[in-house]
Image 1 (cartoon, rainbow, N blue to C red):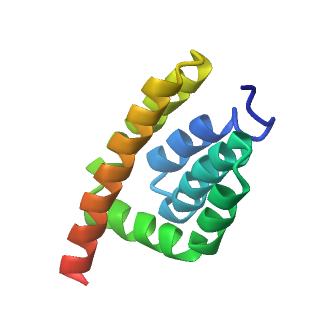
Image 2 (tube, one colour):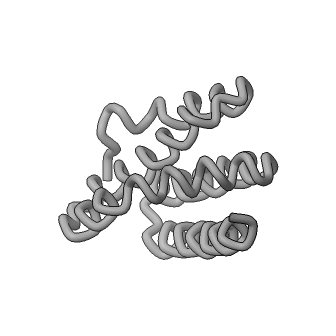
Image 3 (cartoon, rainbow, N blue to C red):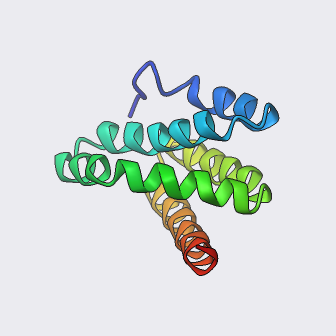
Length: 116
């Protein structure tokens, strides 16, 4: 699977936003990362579902990044694992990397809910 043109620059932009503590842009790019994968999957239900919850995902990312800045590096590491698996055409590893990332996101969401 080849990634759409906007996908490749997302990771460096995310890293730059993290270095500049631009949490708002970072949260938007985080969502874009996931949406791009959903669109590239060719699964319209996945893309539509993700789009439907976009605002909540961005808000949660924003809150999580502020709550614990170490989440930023962790997220970038998860994204790299996902990208590596997709680039290697290894669907099993891509699935595992994404599931691990989603479980981590769920843990962050629970922490955010606890503090809000």
